Image 1 (cartoon, rainbow, N blue to C red):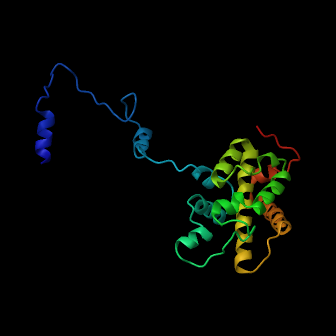
Image 2: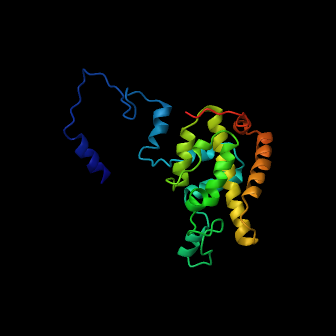
Image 3: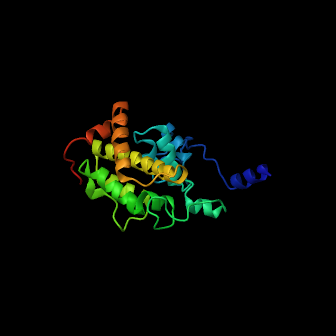
Length: 217
């Protein structure tokens, strides 16, 4: 079968003895082979997963990166996902008791979370980037907030968002499984304690955010 396909391709092809043979690499603009062009060809047709760089290149403990990866893929066991599988779940968001729980609601729409983000961002002079009532997607808000900064401020903000989301998630779990009462003051204290630990562990961006004034572009 392949023989006949090759025959069809070459049937009308006429060799020109006076023309010197040449090699053309079709995967580069100049027709010259390069390892980079060969490597890039493996990713032709790829689908870009938007938040991957913010997740995997931000300084944060591995468990927090994995958690944010689950958040980005909507794979956290919030009430909406539990309900779809017929599993027991809280009727309302454990932190605000006002709306159905999803991961976006928990991290960005919940009145408890909005207050939490405002307080921790105000501590570093970035409260103008706190979630607004029009924000209903955690990833969209994170992308917008991150894009409004640059350099070490951006690195620090991304680490702080990692830390904030992780604290909210764990506080939510304490309310669901341990009967804890939602407590803003407690979560803010945990953020402060963890932030100091992360800074000591090498989070340069977070240490930069301790400066009293931050410039937002």
